[in-house]
Length: 190
Image 1 (spheres, rainbow, N blue to C red):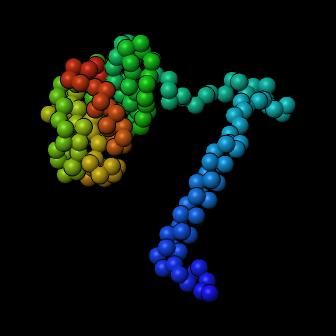
Image 2 (image 1 turned 180 degrees about the vertical axis):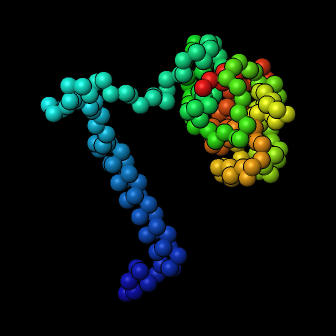
Image 3 (image 1 turned 180 degrees about the horizontal axis):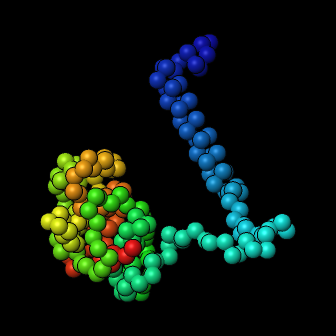
């Protein structure tokens, strides 16, 4: 009598083994899903016994989520020249997002502005393909606008050019574009 293995074609063996392996993987996945899941422990820092009694008098690093003083009220975009940072502020006055930027060589004066024009994409005055372009003022004939490079790269050195582009990371450019329409307030602070 011939063994059963000799009666079955090779494709049947491969199919059977594949189905068996798949069943084992699914069974292990289901079992793992019902097991314990690791969690990260979160602890708040506690002062040590060796902390200096004057440690609380040391200046604190600025909190990125904290809006600059005198940045206005209501729904707005806040741009800090000194911190090279932008905040998107909702109607309640709460910052919903903040991020760093690369300013151009021409900066606006501190003050209140609004988005005057939005352009989906174009070539910037530095020759870089940009998108999410949002103009809000002009300084000495140079347009000042938020934008991000299409390829997500940081801008190259300006080489002495007068540039008013305030460049953002690609994901921040998309967030700003979604947040600000024509007429959205822009507060520029030191």
